Amino acid sequence: MRKRIISSIVLLLLVLMLSVAAASESQLIRVGILREVSEVTISAYDGFDIIDLQSGITIASDLDSMVLKPGYMGVRLAGEEDKEYFQVLLKPHMSDGIQLNYLEAGGKPYRGNIEVRHSTAGKLTVINELSVDEYVMGVVSKEMLAWFEPEALKAQAVIARTYGLHHLNKHASEGFDVCVKTHCQVYDGVRAETTATNQAVEETQGEVLTYNGQLINAVFHSSSGDHTENNENVWFTKGSEWAQPYLRGVSDFDQDGKYASWEKTFTLDEVTQMLTEKGLDIGEFEGIDMTETGVSGQVKWATILGSRGESEVTGEQLRSYLGLYSGKVEIAGGQVREEMITEETVEADKLRTRQRVVVLGAQGHQMGLSLENRYVLGAGDEIHKIGTSRIFAYPFFKTTEETITVIDEDTDNITFKGKGKGHGVGLSQWGAQAMAELGYNYEEILKHYYTGVELEFVGDED
Ligand SMILES: [Zn+2]
Image 1 (cartoon, rainbow, N blue to C red):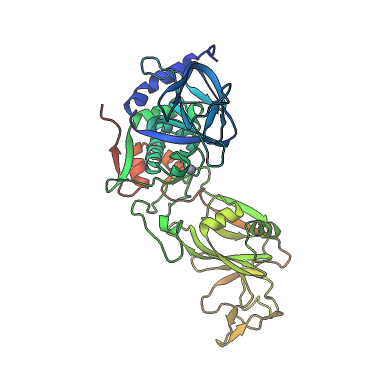
Image 2 (image 1 turned 135 degrees about the vertical axis):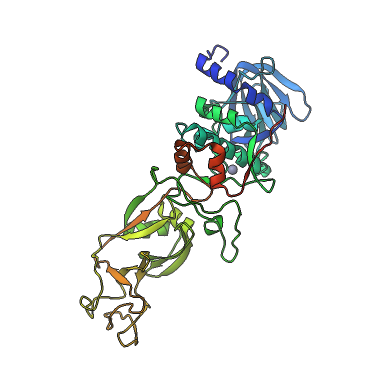
């Protein structure tokens, strides 16, 4: 391991980042890089020491590589199976306080130190302890495309730093702050670093977003498809909606982005299968009624109609159940026979309860409806229940003057027309990229997507 050659590119990268690493030394974050593993090999090309955290004593020094395994209560080192340590800290050798030597865990290099401890399930937890800015270096390219404009990358670096600090202790029960998955932020250590993203971290060193002096919950998404959404229309429980003042829906700049608009077609059987797999037991899928949308057109509530009942879901649930890019969707129909139901065209026996129809509203919104247990107004304002065999009245939906698209009984497709990718709240990454291309700087980008926030410096002043 000592013989590894550091390429000049890597060295250049390291030198570039020395100032960041040194300046925010005191602000540490603990990242759970490996969880519930039955052994871990730690190595470093220029040596490392192992310290027993209980006694503070160095128990092994100048190692190239070490295999650690769980004991009964703690951690064991290979070749010393009779001894057990509660928690151990592995520290790479430094040159004049500068880290050019990385610890590798599971074959991946990490800045900072590594702690290994016994997990509650009797295995090992491997924790990377490093400064927040070093952590952010390992996040930016995993959360935003590294070829994005420098100002967009800087916005993402501020978000990653704010998000990391806001979620310290999120995994306190497991002994660390944040995990390496989307549950927190995706972190991949030194491997995730690029010259461009590290520069974005350095140029925003110590900067975070606050609202009323408090760190914000800096949520972001890929693309909103023209307008972002208020947080309370995306994440809420019925009867309890809490509006976060800095997470308001704003116009987006992502119209030319990759996910600005899209379409997805399923067979009705596919939808039935997806819903069943997600535990939604309403029989054969028959249609979706988009009952409420937020300020951006994102679905807030939808009713999924099935042969054995219906289920009210949120837009985020709909997105997750059907694997859609976003919850900003409309039903664009399927292999439909588009037909205006007018006095001229409607036939007495045209509509049956087993048919599915898409209703086009006056504002152009569309909703799929099952006709079971629905009523129509007749020409003389008399009310008719739609029968199992036929209906008798027209004009249909007389009072709202809505038109109807009839889906053929043999139709087996449904097409969703959607906008954006992700939950639609907070910063839109494709929008940030477009703003950067238009010449906005990262502060302007952040203040556009997060209403009323301030950019503050929280690093060490020296
Ligand atoms: Zn997590």
